[in-house]
Length: 129
Image 1 (spheres, rainbow, N blue to C red):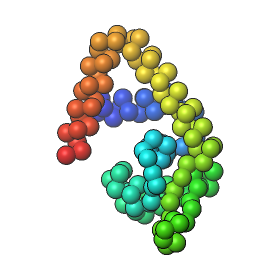
Image 2 (cartoon, rainbow, N blue to C red):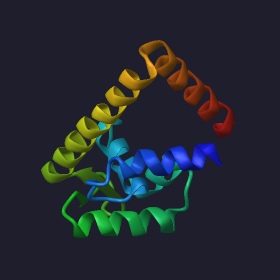
Image 3 (tube, rainbow, N blue to C red):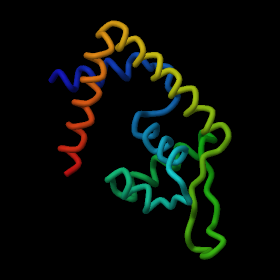
């Protein structure tokens, strides 16, 4: 329960987010991982179904955060790209999250905060196996 409460509280501190956490994760992949990205590749990267990615992408396209273009190699394939508006959103959100992390580090102390991050990383590795 502590982990769930932490996640909720952490996200609540970022209440100015214009998109859902799952959409934020998708946007971070699009903005940080070299492309091109297809919906199928994104579904694999996030470990979710293609219909879930399709729904998330539809919302992000409607909001103007991503665009879809036909593959020049294969007109049947579609690439997904972040728009300038999408990149700006991610930059703003990441600055906001950096501020939250700085607050945690200041209140917890740097050593405890670094240990906390290390433990989160280890937990992520265990859960992804």
